[in-house]
Image (cartoon, rainbow, N blue to C red):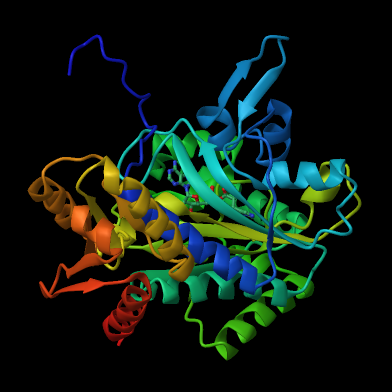
Length: 426
Ligand code: HAM
């Protein structure tokens, strides 16, 4: 490529067919699952005031300190491309006076984080963020987990992912724990890596999440958050695990799971995989009861999680579970004289087979060339529109798999295709 060509920005991907088709199939499945659970879509801005994220995600988190796309707009206001969708959803329901009415919604689309790009980690990536407002019960946390569980089952990915679960209790409980944790870690300062030493001052709970083996070993004897939970937090967590067990949803307690965003309380969870190297979380979330109030709304309990669409797609691609959709019919057209007939038949066939693609060649190359394109498209059948077909109002239909050929009028063609489709489905 010439150096004069303009290329995309690092960490921002183009997704073209066939990957884009798999992505659309995945989105269709996600939408269907959300519909089954009664979640409705919300469409929110990609750009928000910077203060929204500082106040919700937390000013000491990696996302806010290192990863946001923040800039001054033309009126010198500091704005940020959303790094996640929960903050915007909470802002929107408060601003629209809907915090008490909206119960289940989801936000899908691009999120932006200035991270070091690698497989499964991009600077523009896609989430479906699923949020529930107004319900405090453990059942609501489990419903969110169940939704993801059913989706992973239906995608054929359930054996590749596992559910990691923890409770981080209430802010007061965490504060007590944090005090003891910091005291403990200060005594072991020399065993901490540079990053953890810095976090000791800024965000000590995140040290629990460190991947450094020496830090992990040092944490073995550290105070445990679970020991600091009061009876309300304990009961909430017990109810979560009781319901998960009753639903036969396997889970694993990960007492070091603390999440990288500050707004959580009680239940936190991540669906992780070993199949994507370092980028192991494919979907994550938890309860965030204090956030609506913190942003100025009436106290409203809430819980949610986000699917990492790019990572789920990688899992699907790697495991060859899906194929791009192929047309049912490819129309080969001899000359302009047959074009109108082909388009009329295509319109009627799309009514008969509304879920299938009917593709027209639309350019009068040699029939050999057109058949090559038909083969390449992966279509099941080729319909040939030539002079004779136009005169007789019948077309030649070739089954590209078996090679069988027949000449049909329109109604016969529909009957034949219906029967063949039924056979292929069996
Ligand atoms: P999060 O854990 O920051 O949570 O992100 C959720 C998921 O988005 C991750 O598990 C991962 O699959 C995907 N993801 C995050 N960063 C990237 C990236 N740079 N490239 C590709 N995928 C990525 C949240 O964002 C919360 N707002 C989730 C939530 C919703 N909690 C309550 N409601």
